[in-house]
Image (cartoon, rainbow, N blue to C red):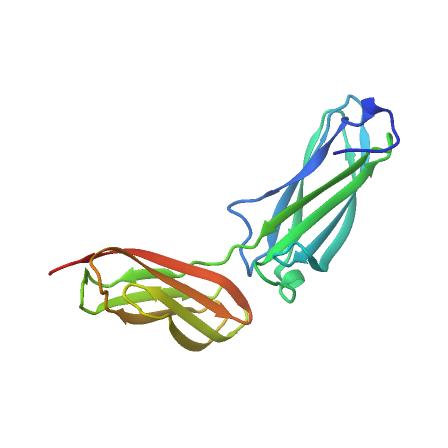
Length: 228
């Protein structure tokens, strides 16, 4: 909400900026582009100084480090709504991603003519790719089911010490596949075999982890037949 030492009639003249994700949201490994909509609701021009701070966050909500600070001055005509693009490049955040790739954008500023203060926060998460799981043939109880798992590295850097984990579809314990290194932007395919112990609807769950990238998951709903 706006606040300040100006008369209450001024407080709502400038609409609080709201950051909206552009497109289908920012992906890890790419630039994060947000749109800040700033609206002058009064019949007079306004001069706004807007400050922004982007921070990498732990999943607990505690800030890890600031990634970027900037400011800009905007001249708004009466009743004007101005969309402002804000970009956090991959190079600016690549060394500081933690936990769930959570980021927070803090916006604050002031209106020169009225001394109105603007302040808001916007939290967002960088999206990670899915593991694509495809059964090669029909699943029959007690028989091997070959499954293809596809993953594309979204980062330009090498993913080191990468590990795939599988659960479900007849596995008594999690299956761990130590894959090793994956080149930047490379696509890898794993061919695994599973033996379902029960018939009916089942799930095969998979996850991928490495020091450079976490929170990558995939699943497949598989109907296991009792007989051929």
